[in-house]
Length: 177
Image (tube, rainbow, N blue to C red; front, side):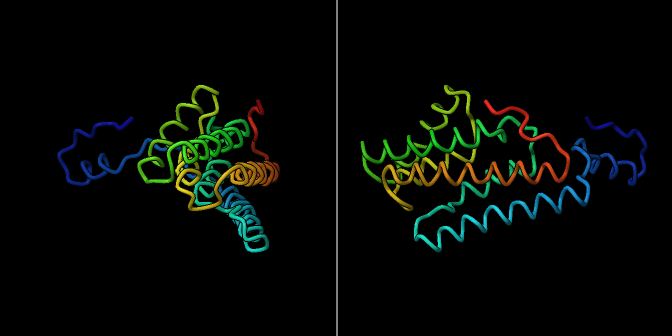
């Protein structure tokens, strides 16, 4: 919460404008470990993509890893939400694509439907809504193979994230199921 500065000086007003209620900056070690863990996880997915020509690395997974590595206490970062949310969204995306086609409007619809499905399952994970769009529009791999690739990729992110948090001695996961 910002505190009001009643001083009439320009300096006092400036301090009030730049005052922050944000949490404190993470330690240098925490930043280094989170960055390294993200690089390892995403580079492994990129390597798997190069080796197999299958899209293990899709953009929403980078956002998922940012949550796992950088905000381990959030519900959106927990394994249930990361893996479950990504799988549910991939399924929704594939099903919408099969039902109505791969048009952009269908991708937009699948993103919204994926959010609803994740919320009903209590597995909300915001980056996964974009996974549904990719599953519908077919910009990656179409069909059930996409769901498997997303599940394997999300599992890998959680495993690397858990290992990194052991190094930092931070609690992750807070819960599994």
